[in-house]
Image 1 (cartoon, rainbow, N blue to C red):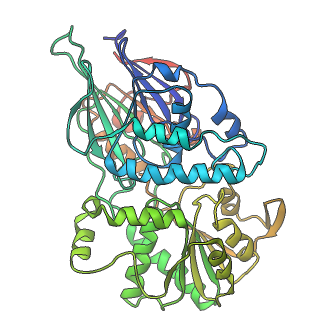
Image 2: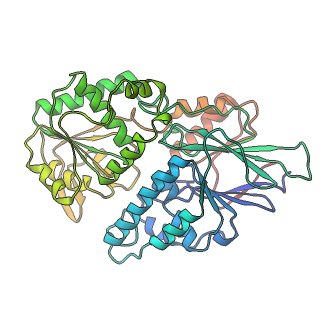
Image 3: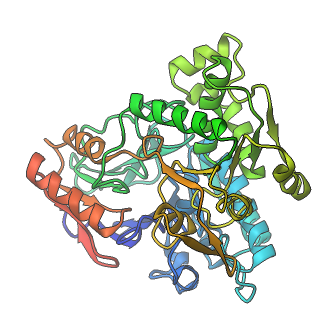
Length: 466
């Protein structure tokens, strides 16, 4: 079997972003994810460099979920010759359609990188590549095993990370070796369960090989009760000081969770009713997709909705659309709350609000998600005296707060517990999609606490799955 199956990591190693993996047998080449490298000085160069494999030779691309660090180069892969089948859950395909169109729009405005501002950069792909990609795209629902060819079948479990996120269980059973099977599981990003909106991450119990994320491989989140108390306290203190609460938010999941939490606080009269702005056209579009897929929510939230609660709408919530509406937000008297993208402040409308309110000691910047190395969000998180934004030095007088408990990624304990569920069968665990220190820390925990063979793989190295 050793010569029959192997995996190679072409992205998502040594960094959180840029996921791109290849599972192959002598007859079949399966790519898993094709994401952008984000947040590093050499990101554009890395995203435009030649592929480490021939895109034309790949048979399939399986997309775990619709964040750009997992889908952002998908259309470039098609542009460069990939003509295989793209697979995902229906929800992932729907959200990816919105995300990739937005990426094309941003590239047209700023140059060739969906998060860049360098006008001399060439676009990574265009609308023709987008249309071709979606012509090749098919969907698979959760919990339905699909035979994709004579060697491989696939089964998708709910990762609980964002709407539509899936963990792919590939079963390899070559016809010449009847009765022999190998199960290889790619988790994508796994959710911080129990989550406010989504169902829990499903268990993996019979993997032979496991490829897992490690964004928080060396850290644990606050408990839910502490997280909720901290969020309410920060909201209240900013309102009492008559400041603005600025929340950089990822368009998928984080925006919807923040709206849901504010909805509960306002309706339960736990905070005063103040103007709240959702200043994210992309976040608004994704929220509409969430509304159409309530069966993916956990049972308590489904019950709330069936009982008549519009969980994403409440008094004094304004959804902005055009640029002029966004710019007019500053004219609304404080206190107020502004939710805007992007979640790491790498672009989007949040940057203008940070320029306006970072100098204000009465205001608060609340970071509610992972801030990658090299991003403006990480620089702000480090609480400097001033920060460079768009070539200007902006004083940092506002309060800078971080809540990790709303992360949609599992923490270190959650990842260890997940591997424990399959520790009796797993032959090797590949720890990827994390900063090196987080990945290496998790590898050591898995070895020490579960006595499993865990490794931190190297980019481009071929690993045989025996």
